[in-house]
Amino acid sequence: MPVATPPPHPAALSEPALLKQCEIFFGRNSGPGGQHRNKVETSVRIVHKPSGIEAAAGERRRQYENRGAAIRRLRLKLAREIRRDPGRRGIVPSPLWESRRQGRQLSINAKHKDYPTLLAEALDVIVARRFDVAGAAGALGVSMSQLARLVRHDKQAFARLNERREEQGLPKLK
Image (cartoon, rainbow, N blue to C red):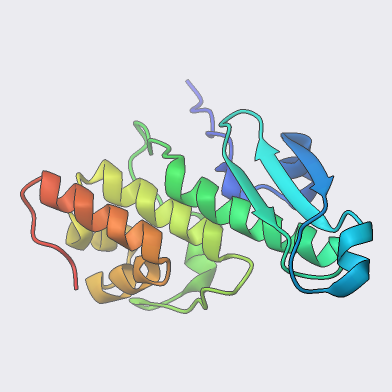
């Protein structure tokens, strides 16, 4: 019997596909920016309807810049909050993961557009391996330090990972 491929993680969706699952709200923000900021709705808030997760941006003067920042923040929140089970097929790194991996190294900057997708995949595997980061790294074909470094780039994800490791009786990562 053929095995169905699970749908992609919401953080990995293309921008149009992600926005189809979202509601976007525009508004005004107070603060620096002068008259323009007080007259024009440049602030953006995006709500992912299936999960209820939301992100906002209003620090820039242009709506399209705030929209891009809000989408990026939403992707990071989705990567942190939503877990997918690798299922019966076991842990198989995605083509994106394989394309970013160089031997046991993982080349990615936290500001790169692929970072939220890779963070989501890493956290899915870490949770599936019951917070055994070394085992998760082995399953993903990278070193433990590389996997920890990937998660460490996002302070909230790293703090949550350490909390969950402590709950499991495992030492904190440094």
